[in-house]
Length: 161
Image 1 (cartoon, rainbow, N blue to C red):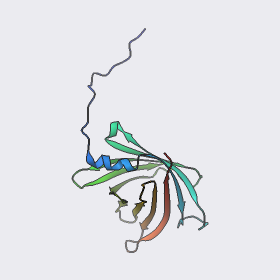
Image 2: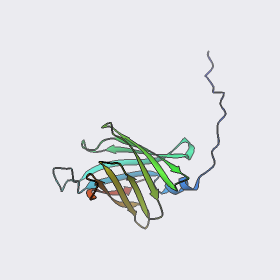
Image 3: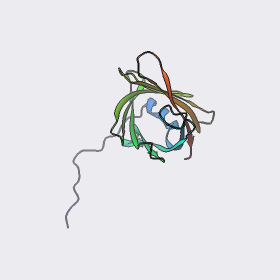
Image 4: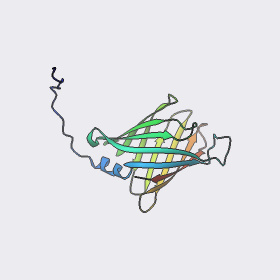
């Protein structure tokens, strides 16, 4: 019999961070409907996703996993962590199309914002929580020409667990 390899590194205990505690409202499973898509050939189409938010590394980051329930929705992963100096969050995004982006994010009692300012293609997301926190009504906008923000698509998140 062989012994299992054991790390000589001690387990690290992390201090809690109030900014991370605010993310708790997102934790769980969500069904998402995407509609009014500027890029979809059928403007009345509705596309469905399943998204989960869970704690990573004992609660020092949050991970969002996206599973498209339609072929036109890519699978994606987001890793969310606080930026203490800025008072916001940083989001690392990667999806099955090979798209990798870094976003900034803020979250308060009723509003969730995500944005990316990049020459040639900026994006912004605004989501509003209902009173019980189990529904989020949101929209993505894009800025391609550097002058005028355009509607990209709408989202409705419904918490299922």
